[in-house]
Length: 123
Image (tube, rainbow, N blue to C red):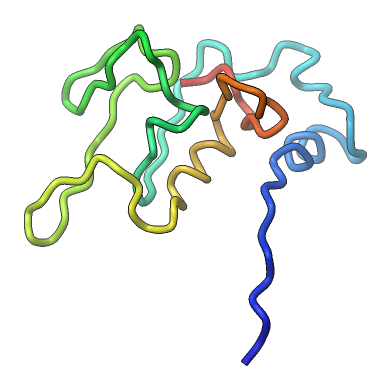
């Protein structure tokens, strides 16, 4: 039996270290390389699209095959279909898909901007 480690979000460090060998600078973002005009596709366990990193109170989420280019973060969302045929619009598996999506393109609406993803202006 081992003690379970405590996990803490580290996006504020990862985004810096992926752009520079030292903590702090963001040379890619400083040059405007922030995901603007880009579309990222993530295939994972699902997405908590009500998270502050993806929510858009002014636009509904479009479910594939429909799309909503006006949504601030999501063009379209492919819902999960379980083996028994039930459909799930959430991220039920420990939020791994939400974490991965946030690391790529999350952009907070609130005070958590230090945890934005590498391409915060991408959809």
